[in-house]
Length: 578
Image (cartoon, rainbow, N blue to C red; front, side, top):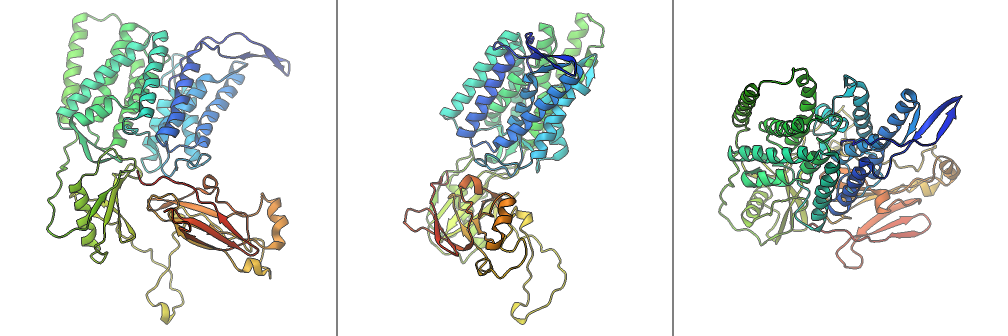
């Protein structure tokens, strides 16, 4: 995110060990404050309207890391105490774009991947103090930090914000209005509007060429490859692309100074972005290529400034024409090959009645033909599932993977993924890890147990005898677990009951409090602790639990039994699929 600096006003001073330190605060007219208002507004709208998978803790970690580093560097080098407006913009920009797989929307204080946010923010901020050319930093801070993060960690640990935020809605209209209006107002004052407009027009032309050349892109929110006009429209109207062109490429510290230079910079960057996106076939790679184009351009600008000016006009025109021809050839030749997306024909046979439900976080509308293919493939894999009515819908892919299909049949829920030949398949079971031989029982011949809890995100410890075994019969009863679909997404979630010994109460309170029950949300086979968000942490000596729809409203209720009383966990309304 760019830091549009404004001269800081003179302010009060304070003295440390005899040395005076000026206190520098931004004015209300500072463009950095206006940009901060735009990004914070988008963060809030993203949480309310688009279910951003980003926690408040992750945002604060990124902003706080940059702010602390900037204040410390300014105190040491300039002997001033300054409000770190630019640094906070850098941190907010990192948090706005960066996503760590496994973060669940609504888990506001999740620290999932905290070190990724801290590390990326630190690299971003330090880049402008360490990587310099003739006294000025080369890269846009948040951009270079994000690019390095994605290249080093890969898509399983970090990913950029999606190009597509959701279908047209009031929230999307508000978000687009804030981006465009805020961008025009801020850039008009800074005389950088030509950079944003020049890039957008060039980028639209280049993406149009790619679309005409047959370029395709897969995404976790779209079933099958995206191509043609649909691809072009998604990219040129993407809120993520608009944020990039209005607030990242327009950093006055890294953009050229002259009006002509800024226009050339914008056009060149638009062409470079298209060239780098041409070989990509996934949304993840396309997003990294878009961000990477700015890093490459920032690296090239200091080298271009070494060329003596002015140049002969005919030479400039010749170089520009040659560059355009090379770029066009690179996009066409380097364009990723098309992927066949034709649906296979329907097999013969009877199908049960099919109900198509709204998809979750997927742009594609599930049609009857595809739903029937899913049903045929499920019944082929599970022929004994019965012939009752069938409900099917699409679910957004995990870790940048394509969307999956969820099917409910005969009170059983199945999850299928699409194979390369267009068929739908159930997840294959992973091969078991070889185990050391253990004592055998004739009643358990052939049975092997493997602890997979850490691998799927389950982190629960039964605390009955944490501080040593005693004869407390209430703790001996143990706890218990029960499966329930608490949020209505047709994935079974896990509730775990905890307990403790009465003789250890003072020890527990001295170490932060009594142990609590825990609720783990099932996100496509991986579990996330949502105890705090769901208010499911009960400090009890638990015996067990049971889940059932006690009042017949279609949502599960939870009963937890204890050694002294019974507590009913209040039923909380949740969203059904779609």
